[in-house]
Structure formats: structure tokens, C-alpha cells
Image (cartoon, rainbow, N blue to C red; front, side, top):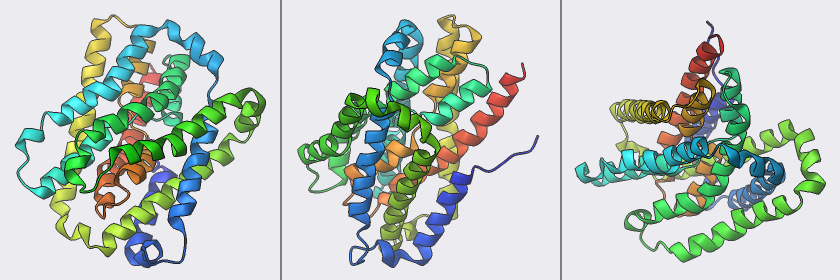
Length: 319
């Protein structure tokens, strides 16, 4: 079996390299208005997200409520609790920062496109995957900032949670609502140009990643992160995924889900959205020079989930 590295993962590695060699483009003194461009891009991403959501499909998808409840519980409760368990063992500021980065990863919603694709490859319950991946993004707009608000204030002086939510409303929630209201008029067009819009989403994500890492490299934040630290982060990411995957599968088995629903529960319940992660990080941690470190576990997890789930999906699809 041949392994193919995801092109977007390669793009992320490339953009981090560009940020390392050319951090001046993303500095606060740069004449290029990257913050303004990314702010507009974020609003457009969630406008298109609202246009893609079908109220009829969401309504019809409510029937399999046990499966949906398990997926959302795994995404927004099991994941954060697994990371929260390790908080009492923190001893240094560097450990607290890395823990915050993992907690941010754990609090994120599930990704949409790859979840549906992987469930389809494994011959799982595709309609349920579409429903859960879509609704997860909406729930995450509310729950992820609430989870992070419990701990971000300790890590970021001058953090104003009211200001954060106002920005969240205008930059994310309002565009989603506008998109939903226009869905019956423009939904077909969005589906038609889905591949082009996906490229736009990825371009904005890469822009935010560049800006985040350029600032971190400029402030020499990564000087405290060694190769050993990266290996430990990789192992921790692997352990977090395995624990969540096994727990979700165990609960699905106890609930006597059929094979298709169990696949959907495990694949959707263990995915984390890089789109929401980069967007939320800019809003929640935009003033922190350590933003690159915050995004590090998420980017490693993104690459890892694509690789592992694709292998598992191929194996299950051949059953």
C-alpha cells in the first residue's frame, strides 16, 4: 500500500519554512495588511460555511440522536477532559503553554470534509457523518471559546473575554447566520464552486499560520522548543488520539451501534478542525507572541489524523 502525503500538509510545512526565513512580512511593522486580509477572509469562510448548511438535512439528521450525542460528547467533553486530567502536573511556564495548546486542540470542533470522506471510504453512515461534521462547527462556535475562557485569562494578561465574544459574533456567528438565510438562493452556487472555495479556505488558513509563526520566530519563541520537545508533542498527540478513538469505540460498542454507526462515531468524534483552530486562535490568542506554539499540536494532529484515519478507513472499506 502506497502512502501519499497530503498536499495541504506539505503546504503547511512550506509556509512555516517561509515564516522562518522571511518573518518580516508578518511583523507588526510590515506594510502588508495581513491582519485585515485574514479578518475579511475569516468572515467569508464562515459566510460560505453558512451557505453550505442545509436546514432540511440538519432537520432530517436529528433522528439518529444517540449517535449524534456520542460524537458531540466525544468532541467537546471527552477530549477536553482527557487533557484537563494532566493540568495538576504542570510545573513550569513552558509546560503550561504547551498544555494550553493541547487543551485548545481538545476543545475544537470536528472537521467537515475529511470526516465525511473518511467515513465514506470506510463504508460508514455517511448522512450521519455529514450531519455531525456540520453541526459540530456550529456548536464549536459557542463551546470552544467557553472552554478556553476558563484558562486563557490566566495565560494572557489584559484578556477581555467580552471583547473576544463581540469579535466572535461579528466575525463568525453573523456571517454564518447571513449564509444560512441566503442558503436557498445561493446554496447551489456554493456547491458548484465547492473546490474553488476549499482552496480559498486553505489560503486563508495558510495566511494565518504564516502570520502566527512569523511573529513567534521574530520573538524567538521557539528557541525554548527542542527536537526532544517536538518528539514529546508528537507522542502526546498520538496518545490523545488513541485514547479518544478507543473510548469512543468502547462506548459505541456498549450502546450496540451497528458497524456503520460505530465507524461514524469514531471517525467524526476524533477529528479536529484546522479551519476552526486557526480562526479561533487568531481571535482568542491574537495578541500573544506564542501563537505559533499554540498552533503546533493542532498542525501535528491534523497531519496525523489524515494519515491514520485514511489507513483505517481503507482497511475497513475492504471488509
